[in-house]
Image (cartoon, rainbow, N blue to C red; front, side):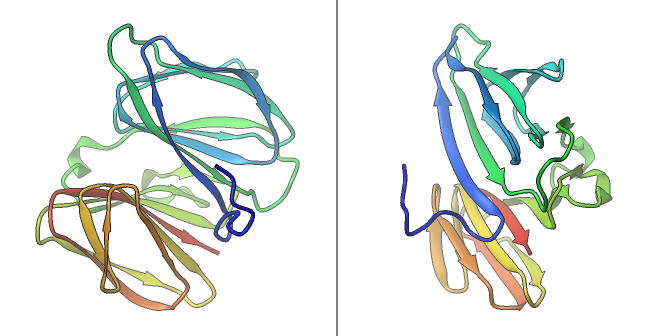
Length: 204
């Protein structure tokens, strides 16, 4: 998919939804100067890279790769029977030429019922994975009738990506696969009409 009129939102470059058949995947290929993270929604992903990492991630886990000055990696579905469903998301780093790095984020079972959990940030607070960008990325999980608020500061932008369920932001109803953005500062409320999951990006 390529739309010259819409090549990202602030530092957010792409959100790719991938469904990978058993035993299939993406062979070794290079990246540079991009912050890339994969969020496993179903199944497992087997990752290998030129930094020597060889890891398998499961449902709800995130791998974050800072490509920096250059890295090669491959991603495969290690199962012989179950599909892999994931989001792979790219953000521009705040500067070029970082030393490549790899890290992971695993959800805390004690926080599983929390409606809003910080997964990725620049400063690593609240046990979040660290990214080379002034960005905060939250996992939202809401039950029917539930809601969360988020304060968007002046000069920043918010992107909401719905993974499952049905949410309302600013009076606009969103369903799985939909995204919405705003650059209006203030306290924003996100409401759910059914069991829902989403990613919230707070970007400089």
